[in-house]
Image 1 (cartoon, rainbow, N blue to C red):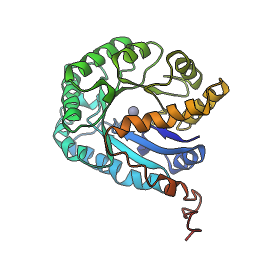
Image 2 (image 1 turned 135 degrees about the vertical axis):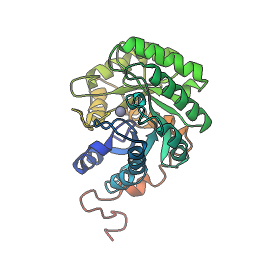
Image 3 (image 1 turned 180 degrees about the horizontal axis):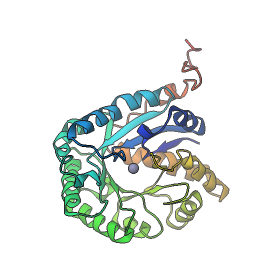
Length: 285
Ligand SMILES: [Zn+2]
């Protein structure tokens, strides 16, 4: 089973996680810029964070044969902090980088006027830089948050096929499906979605435009729940091809729209022994 986790915050995870993910079949990840729990006090701390998302973290992932890409944005929560707003001016510098495959995560947290403004401004950047957009939906008042999200996406003029609306569930799935946007589902140990509920949604709505992620971060989460979802699909009678489409080909297609998703050296990288870091192809030299 080859797995592409289209939303995971590896900054908050250990190297043990990389090792377990690689062993479970995770060969590529996208790490969206987000809130680190501790509020940032200036735009400068975003610079260091963004640099680590396109520098240190891909290097760390590479040691385990995992390809690492990033999405860059001012996250919805910190869009409300005037100390963080100048980050919007820093974004163009990062949106030009090859390791950046989308603008994200953007969208709503508490649905404030400040969030409205940052959301619209960053969708405009996605259009200007011809990048897809990763849109977070609020955890409270989900249906209303999702409706408003889709309205702002439609207003921005971005092609719906270049937008993934994330953290969906049974309440919001249909709304987003009808919009033409891609659908993201975060599989969590005890909130959001479970592998079993995900299988039910795939049965009902099919596999087109469906993305499954672990959204693992500094909270209670599990980077192996993508694999668990693939196994739950097989146990429920889905084919290997269905699993490959949802867990690999769909994220490749979505982020491939950036023109920057270079997976060409993946076979060579997959041949690195995660235990020793030696290349299996070259006999460990
Ligand atoms: Zn996230």
